[in-house]
Length: 96
Image 1: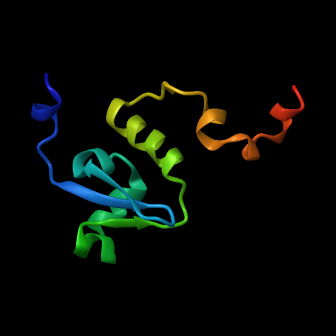
Image 2: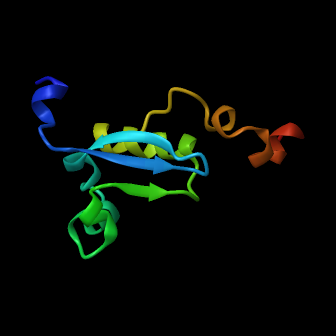
């Protein structure tokens, strides 16, 4: 089965981080998450707009969330430390 035939739902724009990096995600994929399901199908502005803004979230981390929602598993292609930068992992600088 191809990705095209698996996902027939609308594309939801998800703007992430302070620069509003755009992720275009199928609605049926996003709504696997209870959080996004309630946001897109509940009594919230996201449901009315069919768009989500996550200005305080990190786009690098959100990319992992999207990959997990699409694949149902998480297998990073890059070590998390390289994505987030060393400032989040000070012990790695010390060799621990």
